[in-house]
Length: 121
Image (cartoon, rainbow, N blue to C red; front, side, top):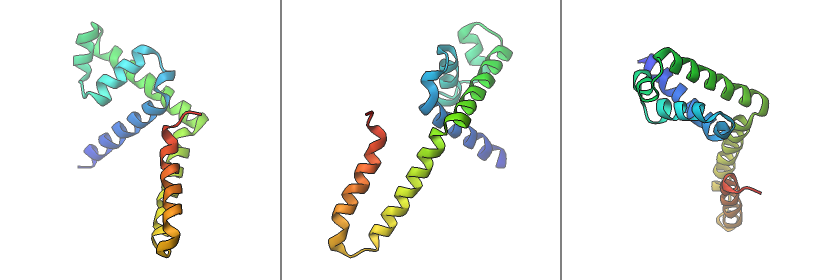
């Protein structure tokens, strides 16, 4: 089912973009994206909750998606994060092939790099 794979990829992409850029969206955009992509509400359910048309919900979601993609195009935070994670994965695999006595400190360094995403300095 290629359509299901596409929908899942899109949902994952929007959720990742929202993780990085969500605070830059309007409150309504954040709420609609969360309802639709995270909580799996239908357009009709969101429309009923907010007493607006399905078309209005759809337009809000499309605009929010566009804004998220524009932020990524300009700031590239998601791309950089993904590149960093794949580089750390490669480093871990290379460390695994080293003699045991060299692994400990390098493994600790990798753990620090992985934890770096959670630090705000």
